[in-house]
Length: 415
Image (spheres, rainbow, N blue to C red):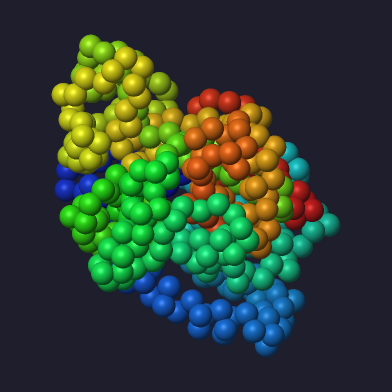
């Protein structure tokens, strides 16, 4: 249950015939993704040892002092392999655009690097009196270690770190065999909140945008199907309790909370007369700028069925019906910047989590029923973290006051 708003503006639009319904609007090649992500998890211990031991850190500092990256860039530009472009409007990555716009205000020269004429989310920044930098995605401080990056994008490793620090996470675990998944499922059922068996969510151990995630799992038959779906993108799957409530993206930069963006899936509110299909059509007839129409497709039918509903069901008056696991405007959902109404205890929690993870830039996905009330009084938890959060989410909410997260990035660098 990821993908708060359309995390990039280059979303691929509504689901197209022939696309994987479990990937949603952002399909990936299954086998390539499975191979890369599974291998990354397998090699994490070796990579941590090889890249972050004292000797490798000394070598890294030596390369940094020699500015090898700029020599490589100079050679690549000389042979026409890489080019710079300085027009922010031509950049297709909205996260980079907001960073670029803030850079202009500060007198920072900002360039997008193009590899054979195509952007690859890599940039060059320079300012008088400062050493110019090359970075991918988002810049981090010169003395940045980077060892935690392997942990942040691994949902199971992140869960273990947060649990060790006494921070709330949904009960669950990682499994590569169905027998393991079934055992975790049974434990979740026995430990459901409110004295009721809990619903379960299954998702790939790595990945984003809710790809191949399945919610409202209530029996072993559903678990088996969900497990197969998740394992198409990773050798390992995470099986955990499904929390109720909106998903919040809490972004922390340099141990300062800079934004708390609420993300909602496509929803309709019942009036006791119209059925779900009619409510969707009515909502689509009153479009909101920047929000895609809600599609009634196979995936929605499956999602509704898990809730005991169909497109012909008539919700009670005032009853809110979620229509998808996917969250974001590209699916017909919504977003709201709720930093100003976030309870102080919750703000403190997000900073504590960032300190526990140990990275200067982190975007947490957190589910909580009511962000205005203390987390300690609610059933809630962290579900994921992002090592390369889309800070533009806080600049472009549909509702609420925008937050200038890009400014905090440059402040962190002292620019």
